[in-house]
View 1 (cartoon, rainbow, N blue to C red):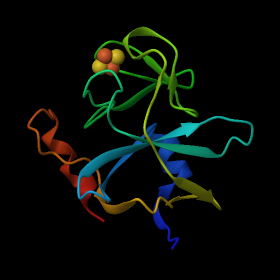
View 2 (view 1 turned 120 degrees about the vertical axis):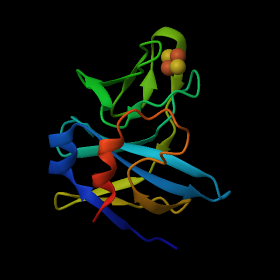
View 3 (view 1 turned 90 degrees about the horizontal axis):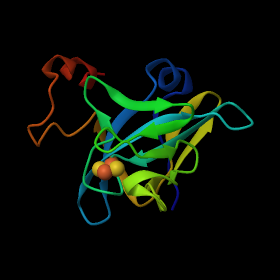
Length: 144
Ligand code: FES
């Protein structure tokens, strides 16, 4: 079975730099995921990564800040490892020789769709459940 769920537009991801949503996986675990632009040859790509560094359980996307992307690489805010935004691979620092966990998305006519049959879309934004988010003003982005 294959289905797809429209998440947002490529333009929105590019304008904001990253875009977060929460899914439930096949084991019933809720996972945060973030989209980042991936400037490959077609210039219209977006990739989705589970919001957790491969070194420690550190969020890469943070409420009110988003994911930090520099020169096509996602920066871990804790120890500074850099992950390729297109491949998820890290070749440096504490997370060297690891790859972020990917979630399948497709871009079609400027829109980003969740196509991963192993997860189910829950809502836009992050879980807000561990008390370490520092920007309560961001709740408005949960509205549709
Ligand atoms: S937690 Fe990300 S590099 Fe250490």
